[in-house]
Image (cartoon, rainbow over all chains, first blue to last red; front, side, top):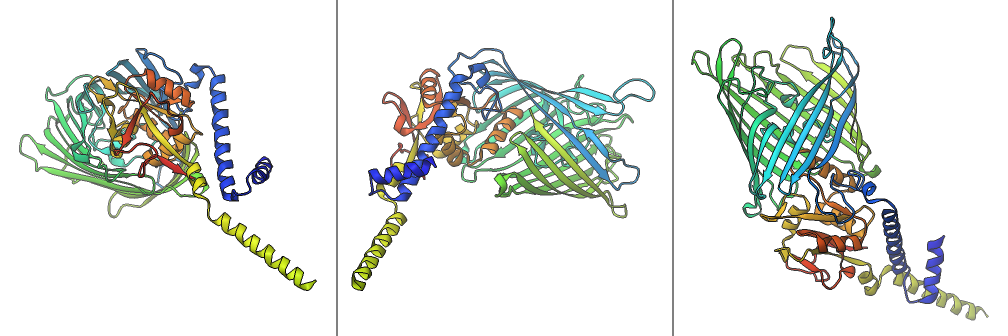
Length: 402
Length: 170
């Protein structure tokens, strides 16, 4: 109504103007009014309230006025999810389950010193005491890192990390909401043995322009795997032999959204049987991280060589390729996806004895309820080995950040 | 009488056709009035006068966090529902509002940065902060840039020049 009146008035004042000119002006004026209303609201809100992290569209440090930096400045973010699953696997039960409750902490200690921490609580049927053991939550320090920045090219840190040995492990890890799918690829599954997902030690990292290629690197030394292969050496190095890793990737300016890279990792692992192996992990990744489409592909080879020389050297492989596409309609809240994954463990691989093979597909749909919460529907079809029965499963997950 | 009516009908049709034609071709003035150029203004101590678009994107994405060893980048961005933010998200980030938010939550989560851009709610606040915070840059409508503020060139171009990339045309 107002727009129509304004249009008539402007036509009377200046008949030379075309209707399109006037509509363009009205649109600009409406935008300006929205801006002014926004500014008015902002001045009415105390600065401390206006500095809400997610609400303003960015990060913990969203501020509205000039203030001298204060140290330490602690900010918290959380991630969690709730799941429902049903499967035709014999002996398996369907039902609801709580996902990890992860708290993420960031604190700036000085202009070039930051602390990053992550604490998780994982629901387990046997976390409590008594017989049978009561259900409960296992607390875990997932990450605890202090980092000193010399420049963009050189940063040094110490602590417990998500091992930068492949892309998924550092990009998403405990943030289920961040990842498109319900589940992680099995090769980086929580509690899995295939890759050492955590690392205790020191890292140097940085990025170099490299003529527009934007080379990122990580190099680290640490305790490697613990006596239980799925665990990092949190309490100390079990074999007085450090693991080391190096990771390099590029993100070319000319192909915004592309990341290609690879890693190497070497460790000595000691089994309870007394056997010792040299572990050599190599991996590569290709990521097109725009949502139209999203393509993530990773491949890993793990080599185990017996120090005594009595067993044959074994090579285990895993890879996955995932693709998603953010549909352009309905406010772009729907995102279908598909992933194929494969794990092959030869029988000769003694350290990975008991780690299952896998050939499976995941097909799903992500629906973003809000900017900070999503619902995902997923169908999974898996086969562990030729001749074994195929397993079908359905999942529903709501995941969010807070 | 019939002749008069016919002439009237023809003249009405000609006027109507003229009006339709005028609506189909917006004037040059209107196009210029609808164009918004976003200037990148910076604190006076910034040791940079010109950035390539790729470098600007690295700064905006938090991939470049230091101008020099002892000078950290402080990125100031308007809160949602502003022309400046819309243009920066479209042209530099090439992201929607929700993708942008997810990007920064993920970036902090991965421990790549300690914080995201600082949010300002008005052009005046952006100008005030960029004048007082060393290493800061802000995106503001070029029509509202005060004369004493440093403007960063993008690929050698200033707002208003042909080929300047931080521009919106409606």
